[in-house]
Length: 224
Ligand SMILES: [Zn+2]
Image 1: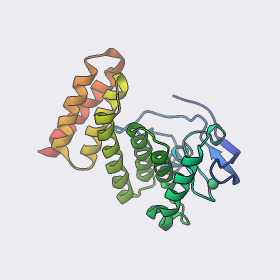
Image 2: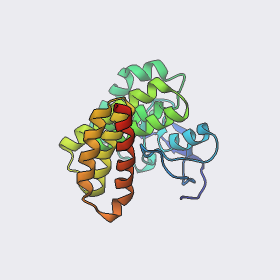
Image 3: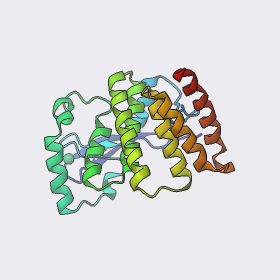
């Protein structure tokens, strides 16, 4: 459990230089996690959504977004140019920039992350968090959209990133769990088996083995 507070701070956009006030997440209280590792946060679901949302900052002027503190970012000239172009051309940003739906910051951070050569694991994590926010805000179609994107990034991560230990086990498990949530129950079962193989009975990830057992049972019932 984490205890702390959040608040507001002023930041300067590393892309366009716009200065603006923004909320920061700080630390927060959690009361466990859902099976896709979404933190359970006390209070109304929309309060929890806001806490998760605060883990990315998005510039209101140019839509540059990132999970890191803006003052720690040092973009190269080429990165700046490519990110600017991508943000201008992005279809979802064009449509939703004005309405500012709760998942928009994660989408923008994914767009920027691709130009900043983020590894697939990290891009998948942004999409997974977007799906958590959508669930808490009851945005069903967008929840599935981001689950599918997270799934694709995680699959690529398993092929291309060199994941080891806990990260390998958790990523493999999440591929199973996201498949289950998207209705691919048989596929999910295969990935749970793979995930179980990667833990090798390591007591440090006993919690994950328990989760794999529980979710496998659920997927078997759903597949029947
Ligand atoms: Zn900006």
